[in-house]
Image 1 (cartoon, rainbow, N blue to C red):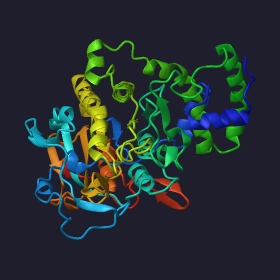
Image 2: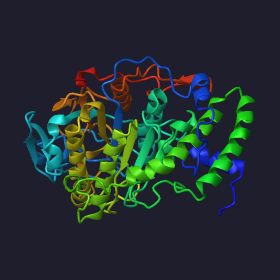
Image 3: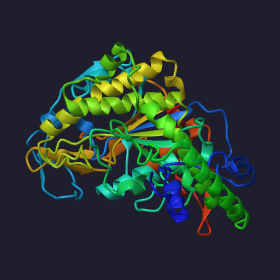
Image 4: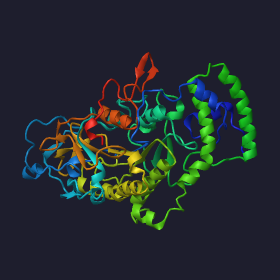
Length: 472
């Protein structure tokens, strides 16, 4: 039998949401009544109940995927017309056309490249934002900005804000979960990308490693239930005395809440990750048994995302896996500064079928209308080559897309110029994107605030407009 952990160790584990046990029921109702663990922002009828963030770390080339620019073929091999801004490596080559043909799909006739034929098959569900812009062209800053609205460590992630604003509909799972599988890495910036920042600790992400025997650290009890019960009763007595001396401090209450959640996760997480009951048709739909292991690993994440939506989890983020081609390494799989044709080809094969399957599966189960999918990287890529066969970072105009959750399907909002270099029409920002996501979740983004260091901070900082034209 393991020796009991010290109270300090237990508090530390509880504050991460990954503890081996939780304080069952301790002061939960009192915490809800007396502390603002969940924000009371202005709300209205939501169109979406959950968000699935399909994060393409490294930066997908929009001109090779969803933003067709025939003029690139005309100018292929020539210097880029007009002014060229500084790039990450300033090894700028000539205009580089797409390596893939584009086809029109669906009733909407939206163009999608041959990178994504199966996503093309569900294009009538997609709302493409082709005029997206970002402020940063470096990975860590770009990742923080895309996740938190700020370019550095210490601010809450969008998932944490969503959890804070709405709580969770799941009793047994956290409101914000990040899925990994197949050895997927956390993007540049580290786990701080998924942080609660200054929000109460219960709103930070729990990382679930979908294909590991222990999907969450310490999720398997190391002691008998009876021994756990005795320890928790003892801790409960201590915490009841301690919390009363803090005037029910929200961060102490959050730690106590995490004890309870971690206790329940001991059974909920293994049940979530056990996909043995899924049908053969479902396995085939997602590609769970695909001979390419990274594709199968990402397919598992997509399937678990659906299962998490069914369990009421508010915000789920997925993680792509790298092939170490052309600069696209563990933390930034889509970052193909060289060999973009090979690198993007492998990455697209990994995600195309699983994401299309997720959309189809949600639709068939009546869940797509209440689930908002957001597909995005931290920036796009240049229309001219880096060196001879790669593309550098381009935050000046790129594409993200949404699906389900109250957005217009088969719709395009915004545009880049004829070369796909700069956004020129209905220019959108990361702040606008998150303002719209929160609106679709039924929250006024300007009122979802938290007082910290003398200022009412929010996900959209002092910016952001709801993109009303994309709402169905």
